[in-house]
Length: 308
Ligand SMILES: [Zn+2]
Image 1 (cartoon, helix red, strand yellow):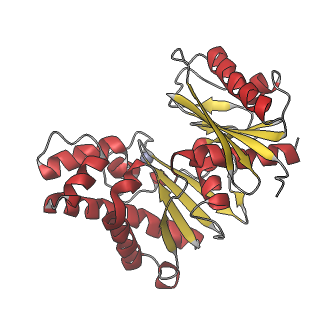
Image 2 (cartoon, rainbow, N blue to C red; image 1 turned 90 degrees about the vertical axis):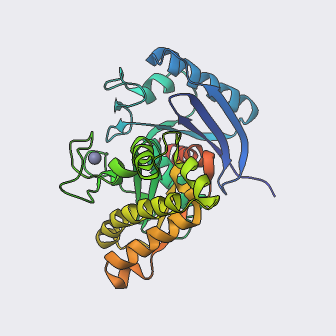
């Protein structure tokens, strides 16, 4: 069966640029990975991205559009990175313009977690669910909102900061300025910090370490993971009461804490959110793994072509 067309999705991270050539049915035809230049200077990063695009276009000349997912705040018109935690010196960088002048395909910029959400909605665990929310639980907690088949971006383009739902208004101060944000408990660094205290084990370096201990029968580790699930479930309950979603898809490193973690999230949701909403909502682990961001960016690439 002939494939009608492809898009290229790029996922710009602090250490690597991951790219995927994706068909309109979600088939990944090629993956390309390149190191993010160590200087993290705009010119060097732009050159590396252009290089990846040229390599992809050389093989797949039918690429119709390119989506670029980047961490940080993307402006409403999706042309500029206003600020980014991975590229601290970047302020109001017109990234898509800098790249598009050097390539021959339309390109569109998007926040990386929005790309993750769109990827899971189009081709992953969130397929067929609308409204759908996505949470990426890693260094921080990023979020994406799908409404009526599209990303909801808000007034300034920054909607979806779901990690900063407060689960305790008197809780610890969060770098965002708020108190008791769910990210402040489940973001990698804090997850590890709380786990070390709870388990009295300074060797814990990641959520996966705690999950491994729980699997080996460590009761305190299991209780800790259940507690973390309960906290994330409290945030999900608020989201469910606001959005009445059909599904919440949860990915990122912490989501690998497995079934005990997900069971606690679901129990916590059921004991907190409106019963009519909490009983029917699907809380699902993400499916696309490490390629979700690049695949979602490719979905943006198809949009770039339509709106060029
Ligand atoms: Zn916060």
